[in-house]
Length: 405
Image (tube, rainbow, N blue to C red):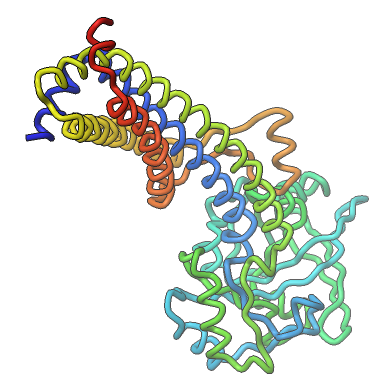
């Protein structure tokens, strides 16, 4: 009965109710949408620099990451691969052989990262075929290479030209070769695009004189949040006197530090937003309470107990909050999905400053249940605290004075 009375009460003054519900709906939309943009940007940063390049977990020779030379590579064996694949949430393993070399074309030279890959497997992870902007993608038996667009621009090299690479192979052997450029691709992370050269794994092993050798085993998994658990499980399965699995946080501490630093600023911004929301919601509740004091006084005067009136008022708050939150979620979900598929593309100086950090200049959203839950809880706390005022006002209500208003 009390709930039914509360439902009828909130629609007796539709204008007042709609203002209250609108303020809560707007609070949900602003809070969830802002956090979705923030978390989406962090996820994009990690995806560009980690998930779509280094992977969330890698396995190396135990000393490789402290001294990243080709001499600390390993000769891969089926037993090691099987042990990694046996771990839960591991979907595959990509073999890579990478080292630095000096690239030369005409009068231009530049230090490059030469990466030997399995073309078929890596295009599934890195989506390299879709990133091709000129020429053709490499195949496993090719003796040609593809390189980043910014590197190609710097060297003034085009498809069909021959790139000379000079480096050091396994155990100090010379690594010298001339390779035709089969294609040019654009990597999303500008730092990578400026230095990357891809070649088939077999060709890289020949170039670096490292038969059956790899420097990294990239663990394929879509569970980025489970990187630490996967790493621990792999280390429990493999011979850690020879090999070691590490997470992307260990591989990219600068990226982690950058995200953590940015999150502090993001938390400060969202705190300011919550303060604005809190004042807006409280102002609406205050207006509603003051307008209804005479109504409350009449109900108490005709015999309704204050405690029952407080309960009805509390139900009214719950109903309006629930409607506002549901409407906020209904409005926000399509917006988040749209901007996730079609992220905002930055341009001009803002884009240049973002690219210098090695991040693609786009602002995507991310659809994550935890964002909705966390923000809705905070808004419920804000509205819950605001709803205390009408209850206190009812408890201290002076009937005679309110009837004379």
